[in-house]
Length: 132
Length: 477
Image 1 (tube, chains in turn yellow, green):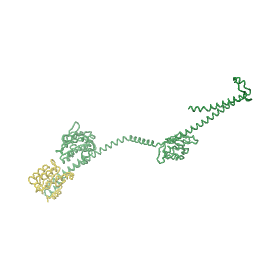
Image 2 (cartoon, chains in turn cyan, purple; image 1 turned 90 degrees about the vertical axis):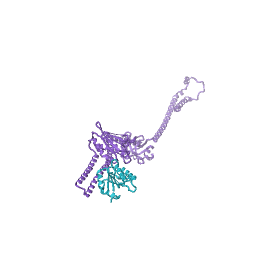
Image 3 (tube, chains in turn purple, red; image 1 turned 180 degrees about the vertical axis):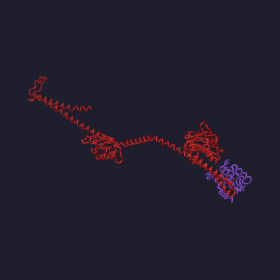
C-alpha cells in the first residue's frame, strides 16, 4: 500500500508515519500545495497512492482545496482500471460535522477528528480494505 | 295710559257733580210757604237776596249742611271704591307674582325643595326629583334624609336643625346623595329658614355636582400624580441612569460572552493539535514498547515532549482565564503587549481560513485602565475584519495591525483587504444591534461595545473608513 501523509505539524506527521510504517510505503507533504504536486507526480509515474491522510487546516493551501485538485488530477490522469485513492481527511476543527457537506462534495472517502487514535485509524483502513 | 288716567278721575268727578247738583236742587226748591211767583223779569242779585222772604233765609243754613253731608258722602264713597280697586289690584298682582315664582321654581334647572322641621319633604320641583331619579309626587311626604348617603347624614341633620333653631345663617354644604338606581351623586346643598308660612320650614336648592366633583377628583389625582412625579423625578432619573448603565453592563456581558464563545472555539482548536500530539506520543510509546524500541533515551524524549505539551495546555487555560477575567481595579498596561496577547488568541481563528495576520510597529504607551476591556474591544474589531474576509473570498486575505504613538497617545490601526463596507453601512457600524451578517450569525454588539469601551471607558476615540481594497479601523487611547 502506498500512502501520502499530508500534515503541517511535524510531531503529528511523524506519529502517523510511525503508526503506518509496518503497513505502507509512506510519502510526506507539509501542506496542500505540496500534496497536490506529489500526488500528480505519482500518477504520472504510474504509482498512484492507495491512501491519502489529508489534514484540513494547513498553510498555503488547505486540505479542502487540495482534495478538489487531487480528485481533478485523478479524473484526468488515473488509468481507467485503477481505483480512486482512499482519502481520509484529518481535522482539529471543533465541529467537523459542519464541514461534512463540503467534504463529501469534495469527494473525500472519510474523515477522522484529532486527536487521532491509532486503533480507529487501523479500523478505518480495514473497513476500506487497505489492511487486514 | 291716557285711558287709564281718565278712568282714574271719572269717579271723583262724577261724585262731585252729584253733590253740586244736590245743592243746586236745594237752592232751586220752591219757597216753603206758598206757590212759586209768576215769571217776571229777573231783578239784580242784591235785590233778589233782599227780596228773599225771611223763612227762606232761615233754611239756607240747613241746606248748606245737607249739601256738605252729601259732599262728604260722595267723598267716602269715592274712597271705598278706590280701596276695593286697590285690593283687587293687589290680589291680581299677588296671583301674578305667585304664578311667576311657581313657573320659575318648576322650570328652574336647579333642584328646589321645601322640608318641614322633621325633614319631611313638602315640595320639590321637577329638577330636584330628576336628580334623584324620581317623580316629584313620589317624594312629597318622604324623609329628605333617605336621599342622602349614610356618612353625610349627621352633617345634614345638624345643618337643618341649625336652620330651624335659628342658630345658623343660610347654610351651604356638599353631601353625597343616593340615586334611585343606587349610584351615589355629589350634591351641593343650600338651605335657609322659611318662616313665612307660620310653621318654620327649610327651603333650599340642590345642584348635581357629580361631573364637577369628578373633574375635581381627576384634577386632584393629576395634581397628586404630578406632585408625586416631581417628587420622584430625581429618583426616577437616577433609576433611568442606573438602568442605562445596567443595559450597558448587560451588553458588555453579552459581548464578552460572544467573544468568549468564539475564544472557546479558538482554544478548543488550539488544544486539538497538542492533544493530538500528546495522543500520538503516548500511542507511539506503546508501539515502541511492543517493538522493543523504547529505550531509556526514547522514553525520556517522549516524557519530555508529553510534559511540554501538558504545560502548554495548562498555560493556554491560564491565558484564557486571565483574558476574560474582569479587572476590578485599573492597572497600567503596555499597549504593545496587550495587542500582542490579543492577536495570539485571535490568530488561530484566522489560520484555519487561510487569513494572514501581521503586526507592525510598536508603542511605548503604558495606559492605566482595564487591559481585558481593551483586549475585548480590539478582539471585536479583529473578529469583524476576519468575518469580512471569510465572506469576501479575497485572493490573499490578510489583516494588518499597525501600532504607533502620537505624542502621549497610542494608535492601533486594523486594516483588512475584505472589500470594505457598503455605502450607508459605514455610518451605522457602531450602532447597537446593527449587523450586515445573516440572521443568527451576528449580534451587532461587537463594534458597539468596542466603541463603548474605547470612548466611554478609556476616553479614547475610534473611527472607521474604507480603503481601496478593504476597511480600516483606528483606535486612539
